[in-house]
Amino acid sequence: MKSASKRLWPGMIFALLGLNVCVVAFTVVASRAHSSSFSVERDYDRKALHWEETARQRERNSELGWVLELERAGGGAMAVRLRDRDGRAVEGARVEFEAFHHARARERIAGELRGSPEGVYIGEARIDRAGLWEFRFIVRRGDQVFTQDMTRAMVEGVS
Image (cartoon, rainbow, N blue to C red; front, side, top):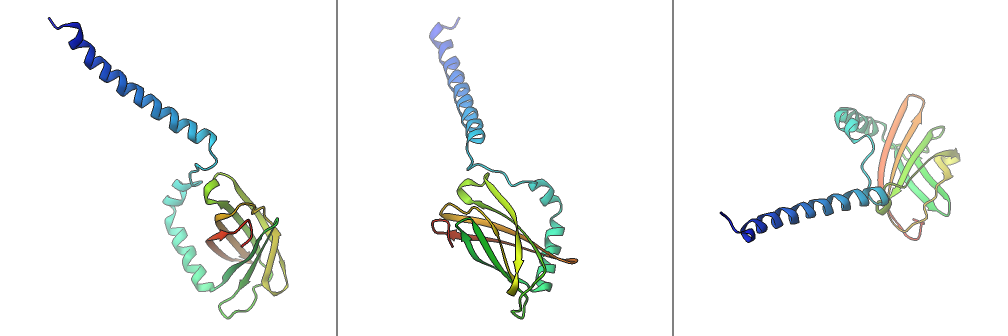
């Protein structure tokens, strides 16, 4: 017959391992529920399944030869310049964007930029935090679609 102390030690080991699992599970759940830093890419599974569409869109982007430059972001406004491969302004397009700070990926802003002469598109965007920002643009003009993603370091909300 085993003594009580020989039965106690294995039980304590399993109890401590179980406690560790509970603490880790609680930490993960609490961090996801309350942190705007934790974020999972929206529709990542759909994007993975339709990777060919992304590759085709990149080819179309190359064929169009358009270049989108972030001219200004901050102070509640954003401006981008859209040019073709020859440097001429691309006018009459519809520019939509989504932006988020890398440290607060769950807090996303989205909007549409209005066109003005010389291919400059302006709109409201609350870029109010210094650091790395991710910008995702979708540009539509007629049946042409151009996409561009960029990461920019913002200083006090202004590029």
